[in-house]
Each structure stands twice: as structure tokens, then as C-alpha cells.
Length: 283
Figure 1: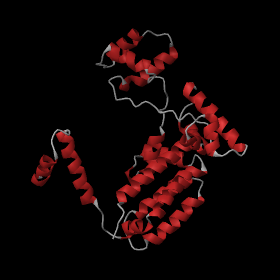
Figure 2: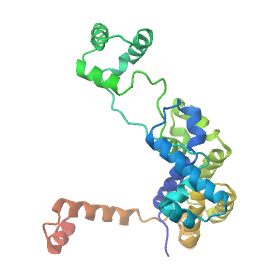
Figure 3: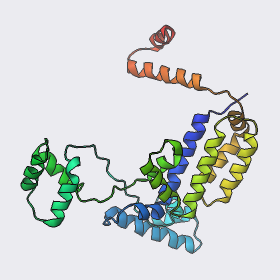
Figure 4: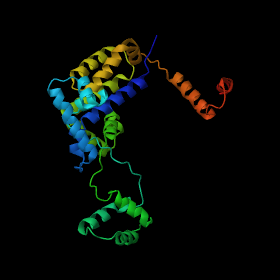
């Protein structure tokens, strides 16, 4: 009997959820993030979005749009699914620095006196207990980290919040998730569908019938990326039903595969099959 691996089912759903969150970034990003100045990427995105939707409005097919605009078909599909011409900007991920505890002081001083020299700020935070260097302060200020009032939320982080068990979220994350899920009807539906599928990953009798209901609800929602996920489920439905109703899993097999790959990476391809076999048998 073939049994689908529940971890892979969840991983496939995670990928589709992140695509949906990206597609609806124009909804939730305006609620969470401060307005950002448009750059070349944002301008290009808006121009392409307008061209694609103009052709679609004229009845032109996706493949024909791709040929006329000189874009890849997947790119045209992505713009066609975007409800708004958002730039999908990825926020930089900064590591914590020694300057971070003095951010409020720096922000207040630069607001009160925009031309204040950095050296003056350096001496001020030194008196407050700063133990870092002047170069570290320069880098912090040049990155604009002292001026942003709110951190930019990325599609990946928003998707992670949707896919995390609500009981494992901190209060701030729970509040952020509530804002994301209520940004538009599609995000609300996406959140409900994610929770519904997560409940099916605990094997139990009758989950196959619940999966049928879940697939019907998903296909009725305006979430095209999840539609492709349901199509994949239907292609291997008997194995998926077994994975959701039976306690069996291939975790041990996956563990053996991972261990074998680790041994191969350690050898860096410098030894043959005989040594690989010998090392596997020794383990």
C-alpha cells in the first residue's frame, strides 16, 4: 500500500501558500507596512502589470501575452494573478547590533535636529552606555534603521505566521496575523483553509471524506495557487487518503536517505561506490 508522506504534503501546501501571500501583498502590505518610495523595480513591475492586464482585458490568452511582451509564460501568469501591481519588495534582514538599544534616542535626535553630526550622536550614546564603534553607528544610520517606524513585513514572514500553530505564536505575532488575515476576503479564506488542512494531518478515520470537502471549498475560493495543489492531491488521491487516515509514514526511509546523502557529501565524490557501501554498513 502506498502512503503519502504527511511532511511532504504540508511542505507542498506551504509553497503554495507563500505564492498566494505574495499575490495578495497589495492587500496586507498597505495595512502593515509604511509607504516606501518607488524604485526601478517597482516601476517595472507596475508597467508589466498594466501591459499584461490590458492584453487580458482585450481577450488575449496568456501564451499570446507572453509572446507579445517577450516575457516568460510563468512571469505572465504571476502578473495575471496579482490583484494589484505591487513591487513585492523584499525587506533586508539585519542582525542585531550594539546600536539597537539606542534607536529611539537616535530617531528622536535626528528628528529634532536633522543635521546633527554623527560624531555628536556617537558621544551621546557613549554616555548612555554604548560600547560599539563609530563605524558601527555609521553603518546603522546609513542603512536607515534609525528612521523606520515599523519593520517591513515580507511575504515569507506573513506566510510563516499563517502556517504556524496559533498556540505557538507570541502576542505580537498573533496581532500581526489578525491584521494579515483580515486584509482582504482571500486572505481570510486562505487562513481558514490552512487551518483546515493542518487538522487533517493528524491521522484519523474519516479524514478522507473531510479532505474531499476541503478540496471542494478550496476550489470554490479565488486562490489559483491552491487550486494547483488540490490537482496534485487528486492525481495521487489513494496514497493521500492513506496518509491522512493511517498511522504509517516513511520517516525512517527519509532518515536513511538523509544519512546516505550526508555521507556522500563528506566524501566529496573522491571515493567510489565500494567505500560508500562500506561506510553505510558501518553506520
